[in-house]
Image (cartoon, rainbow, N blue to C red; front, top):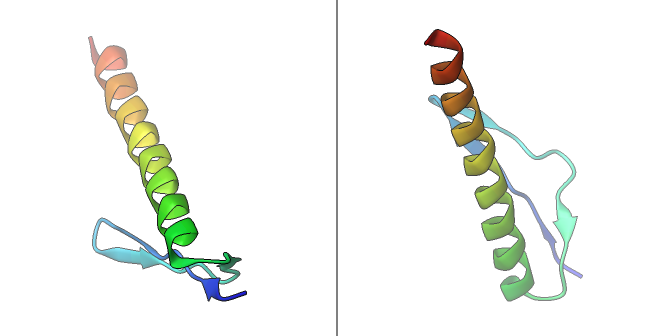
Length: 56
């Protein structure tokens, strides 16, 4: 199976995915990339909202 690497760019830096993940198709790899992106964005929102709540 092909191996895909999911590097993440944040604040001008790139966090390299040293291990990668194997998927049978590019569609499966894309679906995982979308799932991971949603998770990353959700964590960012929690951080932003949490910081705003603490400041009040």
